[in-house]
Length: 335
Ligand SMILES: NC(=O)c1ccc[n+]([C@@H]2O[C@H](COP(=O)([O-])OP(=O)(O)OC[C@H]3O[C@@H](n4cnc5c(N)ncnc54)[C@H](OP(=O)(O)O)[C@@H]3O)[C@@H](O)[C@H]2O)c1
Ligand SMILES: [Zn+2]
Ligand SMILES: [Zn+2]
Image 1: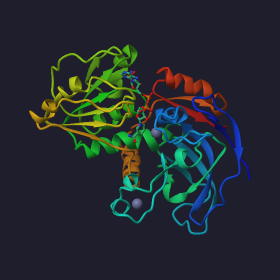
Image 2: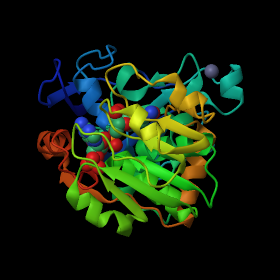
Image 3: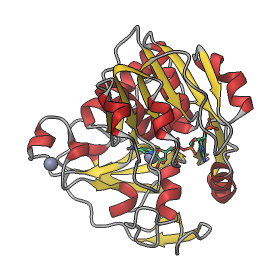
Image 4: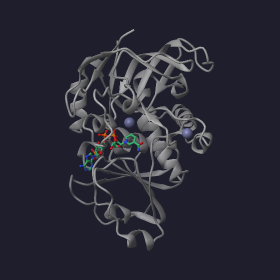
């Protein structure tokens, strides 16, 4: 069979049609008919080879929702017709200590769908079914995709930073990831402060669940803090005045990064040492975290706010993401 996809054939290039024969399917694989696919900023980092690991052609798309149309002989937990989601990760060794602890995302042999394979900007996706997750009935197809990468990334990062409820949580950047972080943190009973460069997002922030908003014009530093935050998550793909944001942390507070800025972090030690503050970063989430996050999203009514585009308009949608014009996640749909 041929899979018909959209690919960047060279660094930074617009997406063009690309057809390929999928690898021979193994016992644990399944074939998924793609129904919808979110656009994550990591798709842009990969097209632009920001992380030096892109192999062209790059077929983006790692927030994939689809229906299983073919299943391998060893797959018992899924069946033809099931609606599943696939995120950033397409495989891991399943045997190392990290994998056995449910941290497949930390496995040395973990493979990324759009790094080691081809993603969901396509009519079909062939993947290891152990990295395909059933979508709860209460989550619609068009909004489910963004949970598979963006959703689990912020949920896992906040949980590993110690988020429970009754805390003060800061979210820097209200894009695809950020607007889900605001929802997870607030619906789970926390008071959320957002930092945004966008005036319209500042006005809408309380509808997402935020209690406080700080507008920080692009390239500027945030004002001196007027309240202390237990956890701050940065979802911004650019370098910021980290030290100024760390001043917002309470003693023993945690600053966690999920956004990937191009330069190393520069943080004065005293900003951490004097208040015993921590800085961490967090990659996506393991399989257990994905299942937990999907169930929390369904139970607490956490829904990505999406702008949909037909798959054929992927380039227009991609440009809107680059221009920070999407409110809040672009999703490509297949009719
Ligand atoms: N750690 C992981 O496993 C993981 C997983 C997925 C994605 N990511 C990374 O997370 C980052 C965000 O992804 P996304 O899909 O949420 O991107 P996105 O939808 O483009 O959102 C990023 C947001 O950051 C803010 N921003 C952008 N440029 C800025 C600048 N120069 N100064 C200040 N704020 C700026 C904007 O928010 P405002 O308009 O509110 O200012 C923007 O909406 C990317 O680097 C992506 O690769 C990491
Ligand atoms: Zn992603
Ligand atoms: Zn492993």
